[in-house]
Each structure stands twice: as C-alpha cells, then as structure tokens.
Image (tube, rainbow, N blue to C red):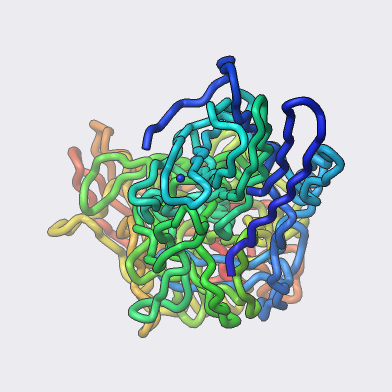
Length: 596
C-alpha cells in the first residue's frame, strides 16, 4: 500500500564514468562539495515526485439553506452548530493553482537517455536529507551522510562493487538519525516523510547517483478561517483530525517506525496532540492571520473513510478587535479569546474515500460566532457595528462584548439608519446583517419576530456578584434588559463574558438627527456630580413595517430613568413599557442580527 520503488540504471561507456538514475543505512558525515580523489559517489537530488493523486474525494452537496453569494455560503458547505462556535465546513479538491505550480516546476530532463518521473519539483535548498550506503547484502552500514540540495555530498567508495542505498528526509532543516536500522515513529510524527532506495554498481572513478524522492505520507491541509469571529488568529494550539466524536473518536493522524532498508512502516500509532500544530502558515496574503492553513501528515493504512465521518477538534485563540473586561470574573482588560473544548468536534459531509500515499486533501472550516437561542430564534451575542477603518477587510462586525459601551465615532459606529448598508446610509438600501462574513448567514429580525421578543418577559442583568446596582463597564452604566435562553439550549463554554452568554439589549440611545439622545454613556462613574432623572433609551430596529405607512420603520423601544449618587451608586426610578413603534427611517439606532 506504500509507494513502490522505481530504479532505472543507464550505463554510459566512457572512460571511468557511470551514471545512475534512481528513485530512491555507523558513522555520520555532513556532506558537502569537497574534492575527493579516487573512486567517489556523487549524490544529486533531482527533485520530489509529485505525480501521485492530490485528491480522490468527490464533493458533496450541502443541505445548508440561505443566500449563496460569492463571499457567503457555498452550495457544498455544511453548517455545524453548537459549542462556543459554529462553522461552515467543506472538503475540497486541491486548488488548480497548486497543481499548475507543481507542473510548472517539473524537471523533465533525461539523463543518459533515461527519463525522470512525470512530475517532479525541486527540493528546497533549506532542507536536509540523509543518505545511507550499505554493502551489497545490506548487513553493514558503510556511510551515513547528511546532505543539502545544491551542496550534495561526494562519498568515498570502492569501484567494482554493488552497494545498497537509501535516502530519507522529513522536509525540514534537520533530519532524524536511525537506530537499529529504523527511524523512530516519534521522529516522524506529523512529518512530510520523503524516501528513496535502490542499488548501485560502481566503477573506478566518478559515479553519479541522481535521487528523486517519493512522499511516504498523505497530507491534509485544514484551513481555519476566523473572519466570522471578527478577530485574527492569535495562537493555534492543536487540531485533531479523525473520524467520529467523543468516545468514538478515532485519530487519522498516524506515525510509525520506518525500516530504512525495506522502506516500510511498522505498526502505526496516533500522533501526539502537541505535535499537530507544527506546520502552520497564512493561507493568503490578503487575509493574513485571519485564515491559516494547518498541514497534517499521516501514514495511510489502506482503511477507507466512511462518508460523513471526518471530524476535526481545533483549539485556538483570537485577537479581539476591542479589549474587553472579563466580568464578573475580573475587571482586568483582556484582548484575546480562547475557543475549543474537549467536547467540540466539527464533522464534515465528506464523500467516502481511501487516503493514499502521496495524496493531498483539503478541508475548510469557516468559524462563525455561535448564536443565543431565545424564543425559537438564534440571536447574535452582541450588536452589529460598522468598521470603516481604511484597509478593514470585514466591515460588518459584532461587538467584542455585549456590555461594552457603544461604538460611535467617525469611522466606527453601531447606530444605523433603517435597513441600510452603512450607518448613515439610505434606508432600505440593504440588510446590513446579511453582509456579515460569511455573507448570507445572518439577517435582521422582522417586525413580528421583534414584537415577540418585546412581549417576552425580561429582567435587568447584574453580573457583579452581590451587587444590587447597575453594573459599570469601562466606567459606563450597563443599563440593559436580558432574556432567558430557551430550555434545552446548549451550554456555551468559552471565554465569553456573562453579558455575552445571554441575550442582552442595552440602552444606548439613538440619533433622531445629528445629536445622540438618551445614551447610557450619560451615566459615567468618573463623574463627581450627582444627578437625578437621567433618561436612557433602548432602540433596536426591525426589518419591517407596523402599518400601511411605509415611510416609517419598525423599532423596539423602552425607556429607563436613573438617579446617580457619587461615587458609583445608581438607582432605577422608572422603567418604561417596552413597545414596538413606527419611527422615521432616518433615525439611527441599534441592530441585533438573527440567523437565517
């Protein structure tokens, strides 16, 4: 089931010269270009065979519904929900650009009338390989040399003899040594193992060995895309790949001892979790740290993978776009958030296939912030805001925390005109929720849905244990109303604050014109002046009308009046009736998205 050895020998009858073209065990030598007199074997790395199959996996149609646009949900993606994040998953063929790049780098030069393999790529000069030379019987290791492509070694040998040889690399700047004729499984775990072996008949003088490496492992490239979490990847700690979940999870990442003379692997064992995140790179310059590709290497065993069973278990952290306070645990600011739990598995809708030696497979996981189920709808954890900062790739975003004060400046705002694509845009120009990455996952709630929430029982949430007063967040009062999540809803493990683990609407005020009115930012704990009768206003748009008068948009409103006594004392004196109103579409207020 592993790649077969290919040996081609071509004799050139010129004085003292034999050229060997081959595909590929104590004293170790670091090889170089030193001149050796007498009979020598000069080694050259001709490349790496890339002619194996890159993907034998068919694409599976998705059952996901919703708007399918260029940056949104694709037809072949599966939406997986639950835990502290959701994901759109797909298993794709390797991109054509990768294949064309390999073919463009093909070395098709014939040596001595022979031909090289159909598709080879040069071996990068920053990598190392090990060449091992044995006697004809393979019982005695004569030379153990580490080489570098481009400065390949010359090895002193005897003419008129037959030698067995093997070459191995882990596609790194170092190469593991062998013990008792084998390279240990731990040294090959999650490594791109390259191998070649053969025999060579020598003559007095210079002898040439041109080596083409074969891949001995299969490769899975897993793209982790955190644009739907609104933060770049800070660390990617580990990523398990296998089938099933929980107690039934079975790792597909395997390693084993490699017997050098035979080129065969021993009994496979699972790769340690801490070795699963060693090959990480940005997927594309345009998305930078927002999308990373984790390359995972494994030994195929010939076991078929059943359709719809591949799963991954990623552990990672993201950088928050605004620092938050991890209340009620601590009031210290934090700027990262961890994701992943022991129970979080993302299962793909893959077609059945059998992984092959040299095969390359691509999995994509577009991570999305999970929603909060209330009243049969899946609500976003925080308000929608627009980031007009120059160079911002994803302008439509959810706030880093529901309790944080309103974003409101020239480039970053969460106050929207009714159903518009920018905060100050033309009403009815488009649903801004639908433009949150990936486009088409979210939408604005309609008037009926918002009215249902309006009529649902709610309370003011106070996160600080033992407090009977309103919370403060970055000095500002968190005037809010909170709704209980639906019965049977999953628990949301992770580093969301207490504000973002429940549905909370805050009294941020609104813009009836050019001036912000009734914002909770009026209640500032840094103030040395007591005040009474401070009115705050809840104002959340819905995408719909309340009457035949279509000049006005539907909005949920509620007023709350506070007295402030310095320092840090707040008393709620009046909580108005929550209601749906029809108000001017040019007013600017908050938007809370729901899942499609």
